[in-house]
Image 1 (tube, rainbow, N blue to C red):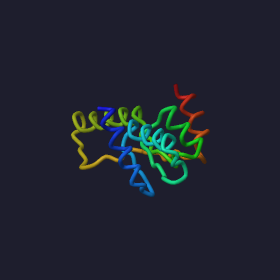
Image 2 (image 1 turned 90 degrees about the vertical axis):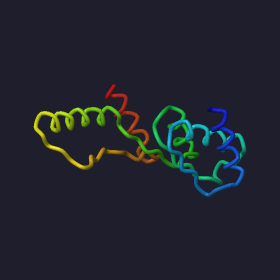
Image 3 (image 1 turned 30 degrees about the horizontal axis):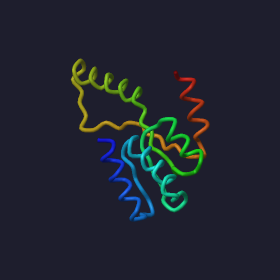
Image 4 (image 1 turned 135 degrees about the vertical axis):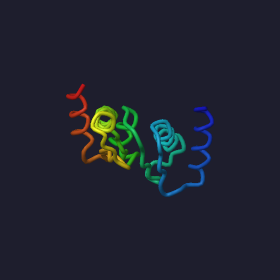
Length: 119
């Protein structure tokens, strides 16, 4: 499966789009590595999703412009709170808003320090 994703992203990169929007960590990581492999750094902007050390490295090096971080811990806590309010209190809502954070070169260091402290 990963091999298929790699070939799809590589063929997409060869068309040289201005921006690649990656919807998961795997695609973000593959796109980052592909730009390096095909010597296209600076020619294509990557907007990623998720957080891991490779994505952080890409942001630090300026190859990945930014990534969207969804805090799963907060999402789980909110889901429990909503379950309680729905089942116990009988309240319901049509939608739920979860906090997402954009990580870029301006806030990468602060984000990494905060996440380290949370662990």
